[in-house]
Image 1 (cartoon, rainbow, N blue to C red):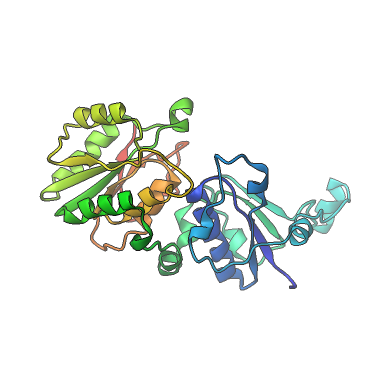
Image 2 (cartoon, one colour):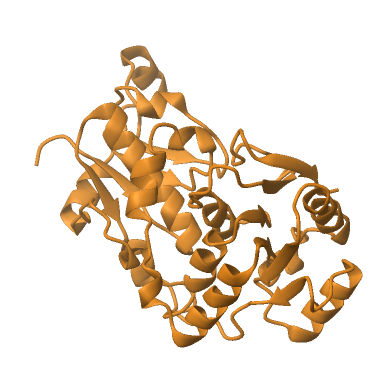
Length: 293
């Protein structure tokens, strides 16, 4: 293989999907082979595992030799001389979570890309291809997953409410109750007979109080959260949420993909603004933004 680009895969499933989507954007715009580096998972404990292989991804994985070559130092010349001759010290491109670098999608000398690439602009023109690749057959759901899917399909107008807690609570990134109240009211004003399905809350006592605080009851809502998340079922909630007609998102990549992969052209997707770190670049143009403050 001659010239090629490598994209590093890291963290959980939602992040892996963004990194893969960025790799597909590179392939589309640059017309060069793009490989995936999943060696990050060789050094992590089992709490974060490689999960992208639940899909029929069509990019190959890089060998250690290819990775080492892609990361190789371009020049050992001092900085001033490199600047004079237009040389870079490294051919590694690093990107913050929500940045968009249009220069990455133009001919460039970078050979290794590391980052999260959580910007909706990278997905332009890839929507149908990504929906095809990130497809998960409901026949592969667990029995509990199939039972939950049946409840969603029985509802006249299903809406998922996604909650992200866990590590977010420790660093102050969790969304406040006011955001969810405003989002629910927006839905109630526009949707007949809404049925709200809550995902992402494994703490049952918290969920009961959450529903009560939002004015929800057993007639118009249900907690469909997976009670125990494992490597085998961690993706089910994402795809169950895809079956809901409308969406109230948490500020997480997992939540993003549940809405993005929905095929209902008339659905309402509500996203918090700002999403994270005073940034909204991840939010798609046709989604409704509601203040998270």
